[in-house]
Amino acid sequence: MKEKVEQLIQEALEENPSLFLVDWEINTENHIEVLVDGDEGLPIDEVVRISRHIEHNLDRDEADFSLTVSSPGATRPLEIPRQFKKNIGRKLKVKTDGKEFKGELIEADEEGITLQWKQREKKPLGKGKHTVTKVEKIAYEAVNKATVELEI
Image 1 (tube, rainbow, N blue to C red):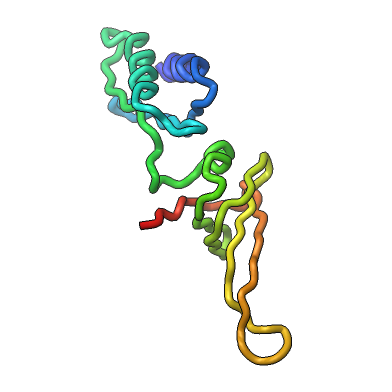
Image 2 (cartoon, rainbow, N blue to C red):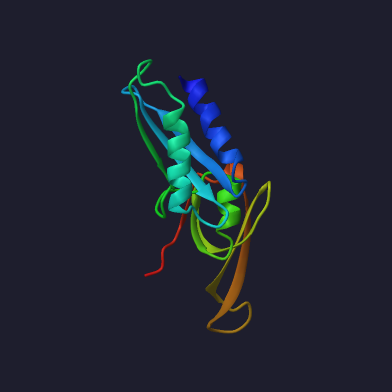
């Protein structure tokens, strides 16, 4: 069943190149969960189309199942490079081994991301502090968790 579901997901996504698979799984009770995102968001009609494509091409007589197709949601961590690219210009919280960064995502390429933020630091000469712009390039392999910081 797993191979069939994977094939159906890929077929459904091929119909709209702006959509991409974030993750999917089948649990022990045959609940299929598919997380899809889009470069310009995920319209509800696309969720319905993908869900129907999967559901209508699986045989319930062969195996009973339940199905959920959705977007990852705003609070779920970013997992794949395409999600990072979609969120350029937004503020991210990124955890690596031993460090945490909060900044605007200014770049995302195939190797990693670049964050930028302002912070107050002690002046190199004299007394007091000044505001400096910091930039940090982080490889995807170094990212333990990255989430979009929602502004209220």
